[in-house]
Structures are given as structure tokens and as C-alpha cells.
Image (cartoon, rainbow, N blue to C red; front, side, top):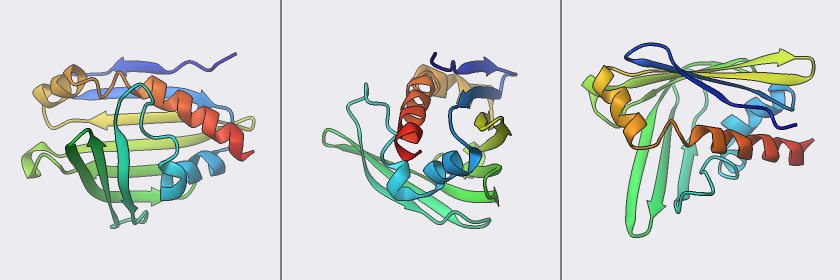
Length: 157
């Protein structure tokens, strides 16, 4: 049976997404923090988009930069890691909107009998920023993305 992804808007500025992934936290964390692995599952297959560049310096104070191509258009996403606790917690900023529009993402990886309870918490700077993310489909794509993560983790075990 496939694990279900739960998406819940907690407040005007917060959304929390959870799912149990069939695989240990060490492996799920590795898939999330090593660029060569990350590139293999991150982009939902239903979106005609390619991750063309993935730079990650996964350490507290390090940064990341992702470049996506959709046809002739490119988009960059970048930020910095606020907290990196191997195999259990990642916290990073999403800086692409400028200082007044920084969102903060926290992901936890909890061990549950050989599986991983994955929880993603996003805190947006305003209700409007979260509403815009929802309208653009960024939140709706996460269940498909995490399906891909789970399929990818199965290939690593």
C-alpha cells in the first residue's frame, strides 16, 4: 500500500506536509542532501521542467542554488541553511523574493520502525505569499514529488 501525503494549512502563513517514507532516515536524508541523488527525484514528472543545475553546500551557514528550465524560460531558487542536523533536521531559507519575502522551510526525518516520518513545515512571510504559492501549484506538487522520493529510496535499498 502506498503511503499517503497529508497537506494541512496550519495558519495564514504556515503549511505542514507529512508522510511516512519506506526507508530509514539516514537514506531519506541522504537523498535530500546529496545533489546527484536530489536531482533524480525532486522535479514532479508531470511538470515539463528540468533541474539543470543543483548546487548544495549542506551545512549550517551553507547555501543552495537550484536552476530549473521550462522550455526557454529559466528560474532560480536559492537560500541558505540555517540548521543542518544529519539524519534528523534541515532548516533553510527561500530567499528568491528578497529580504521582506523570505520563507523558512523546516524538514524533520523521524525514525519509525525502519521507516521515516517526513514532516515539512513552511512558514511564509505573509498570508499573500502562501496564497501565491498555493495558486502557483507549488504545494499541490509535493505529493507527487514525495511519491517519486519514495520510489527513488526503494532503488537505493
